[in-house]
Length: 131
Image (cartoon, rainbow, N blue to C red; front, side, top):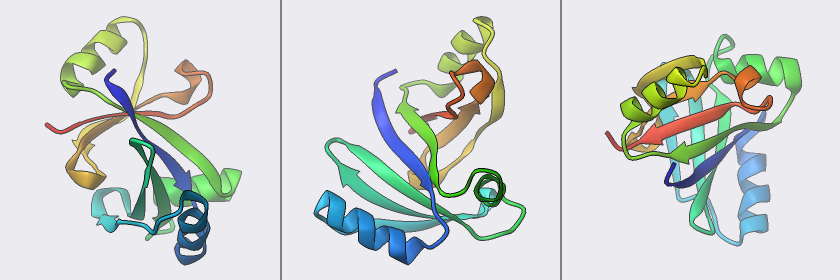
């Protein structure tokens, strides 16, 4: 693991959440991106060397829509940057961790994979790399 890459936050109203985090972090979102494969619209903020990613569903059957229905808005995942996603997944799988989804394309031109939250202290962990 190289660094904390971002914290993903599920929101119901992207504009309202952008206003809040823009005020809290002292600068506006620097990018919005639709991730078709995940059926989400994301909005990114810089936050002390890491990022905050706001996620709003674009489809009622997306993972974020399901999360919002079950748990409401709030923390969705914590993402860590790795140099080699495939090698890191192989290392973790060998230790018994389960992959929920991925590797696959994600936001911000990253390859991503998610570990099962039952294996990671009930926190959805995303691993991401540039290749």
